[in-house]
Length: 127
Image (cartoon, rainbow, N blue to C red; front, side, top):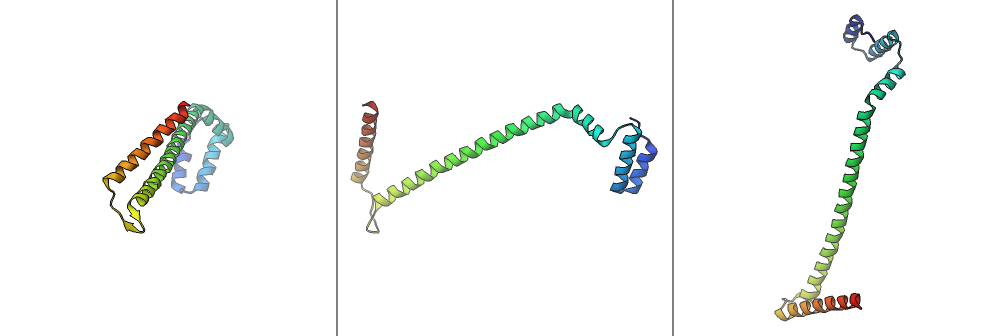
C-alpha cells in the first residue's frame, strides 16, 4: 500500500473529519482495498493480542467476583457476630432497663453454660 505524502499533508491543513475520512477512503481505494478489507486484515494481524486481552479481562472479572463474594460473606458473618454480641450484652448487663454490673459468678455461669453446650454438641455428633 502506498502513502502519498501530498494528500496526507492536505488532510492536516483542512482539519475536518469529513475530509479525513474521504482521504482515507481514497488512499485505501488507490491501494485496492476497502475499509472493510482493511479492518479484516488488521483484525487478523492482531487477533492474538485481542484474545490475550480478552482472557486477561475474564481473569480480572473472576478475581473481582471472588473478592466481592468474600466481602459479602465476611460482612454477613460480622453482622451475625455483632448481633449476637449485642444480644449477649443486653441479656447479661441489663435488667429492667438498669445497668447491672457483670459479676464474677455471672461470668463463670456463662462459661459453664457454654462448656455444657459444647459437650452436648460433641455428644450428639459422636452418638
